[in-house]
Length: 122
Image 1: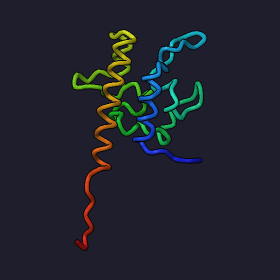
Image 2: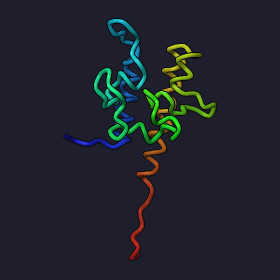
Image 3: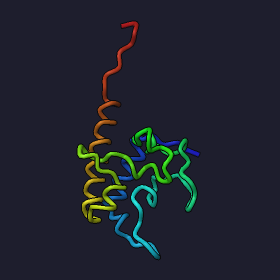
């Protein structure tokens, strides 16, 4: 099984959002952000496998044992999360906030990978 980097996974999630992946209705409910995307490694109706999910690195420590930890990732400077936006935002606001977070996080990860590396011998 091939392992993907956080950068690859977040880029895939961004493509999923941009293609309207969360707009496609499921049989009985709207798709859940992160949980119903290609990003989520868990089996349907199973607990979150903390060690297998790249998103756990973005979840605050105090929220890592929630039923769906990825819902508690702070998505902006206001501290909005998928969980809080489910209660206060529209689908469009959720999608826009998520897309902004993905673009910013991807940019930060790309910057990290582009940093020059120096040999100790140099």
